[in-house]
Length: 231
Image 1: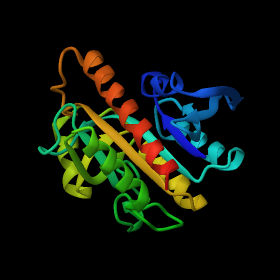
Image 2: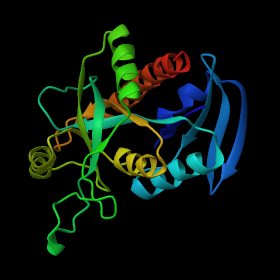
Image 3: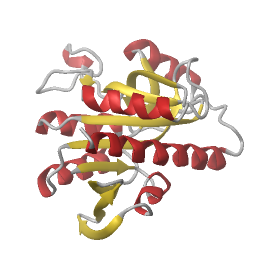
């Protein structure tokens, strides 16, 4: 079974519409919908925005469902010139840019306990995402995706995150999902279709761009699930 998490309904509803024999279970206020997607058993969830909701959802998947991998899908802001609106950021690894115990002498971004900054995504998931994106003719970049409990809309913060972590895109869930998966020994992948430039110059019709980006992420995720199911 593959777990799929999106922060917002528009990032998951399109996948729910494709499910065969959907069944819904509600745990801690989150609806988990199981069924078959392109012949593969999946469980889908809309976690809500931010790191705590994302971690709560991911841990529930690990404890309550027999997931062999978790995909986090949705939209993000670009942090590099190589990614424009509609392009796809694929996580080679994830970081939490707002994790900071540097006052104790730690590197910025280090997660205490495992003492790690860059949490690696599952290699087979990364390759499946690349393959699916290539089949769809999407422009992609693979690299670090940065997570924090902030909607990035200021150029200085964007540049700091890019320079500090080498991040190519910024969002609010992938890093915490990655931490949960790393802790539980479950491979994960993060797919982010770029919906804005993350520096305050987002298009005036951002909702339309975000909806279009979410539609792309839904189609891409469905194909990735199919590829993983055939492995």
